[in-house]
Figure 1: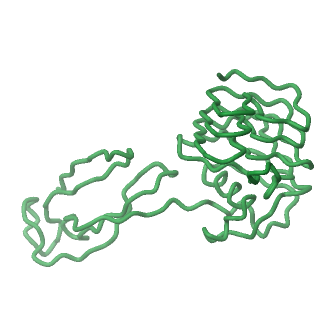
Figure 2: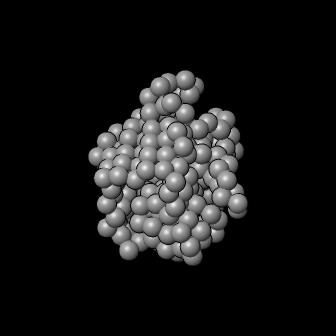
Figure 3: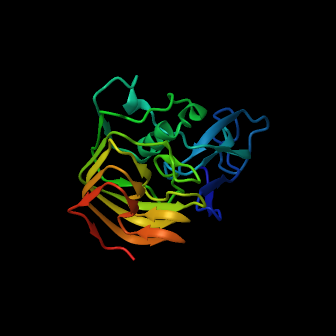
Length: 247
């Protein structure tokens, strides 16, 4: 029988070290002797789905380990398809990360599609989502002159669901779940809980709002140098029916 010990790294990733013990049917198989000749496989070590994880080079017979390597968590672009749908559904944290990459124009760096602002399209949350306090890159980008660079222009319908454990800590303008909600956009029926820290125009839901925000709620903390608010940091659009329970 294999014996193992589990160690927790500084980043909270569990690493399993398998102690010597042979399961090779042609070997000793008394649980105390390693194989004379190892045959190695890379075995994924279980982890939170949002964390970069590890694989261990493990002998397929006795379970001895030789080395580990990092494996990056991959955004899930499957929900996007070819981008032609009028309505999209998001149900997982990695799908949320994919949304940010698509709007921000960085999806191709992760094997995803070209930049798209979702103009005239609807995105609906199909479940509550736990972002697990992993560093979040806000959806959309603005320049240092507060001009929209990549804006979200669709409708984001939270369907009364909640995104929890949002963690934003950025040193650029526009911090929140969204960096910018653009002029053709509507964000509604959404709850967010988390901690958001930025520089200029920082909010729990969005840093900059140029569209419509309705029936949303935020709880947690928001901090920034200037233009800071619990729902939005700076709004030139509409905010209605919303509640800030943060500080």
